[in-house]
Image (cartoon, rainbow, N blue to C red; front, side, top):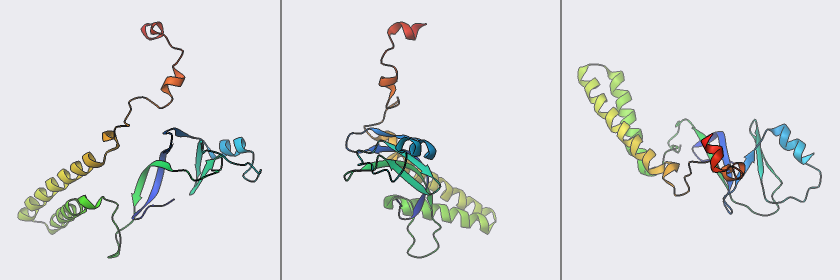
Length: 166
């Protein structure tokens, strides 16, 4: 699993896109203990668990068909060192974010009162562009946003009103 223009720093959670269920995260030793071995001849099934160890990712049980697994991850951009490098910013916001940020940095390095006041302008434009980008692409704007954990109902199904008022 990889992304053009960046790498995966941390996987926060994985979701089966077909039924919307979250795959349970566990430690590598726990998933190995559950599966006993990666070569035990298990016929596979619908993925329900995942673990990360270093740069390796394991999904269990081994998929028995093609599944689409959504991943929410924290990304690390690669350095923009070549003309063909792709920034890890949505295309619509690349100019407003990158150009304003670079202009502010360069003007601050220039020194002098006039350069610093121009830098302040570009910093404000950069801040606005970042806010617009986050607002447009934040996960909380999606209709699936929930304020409770996916297993909350299962964990609290036996609670009655009296449990809440004690």
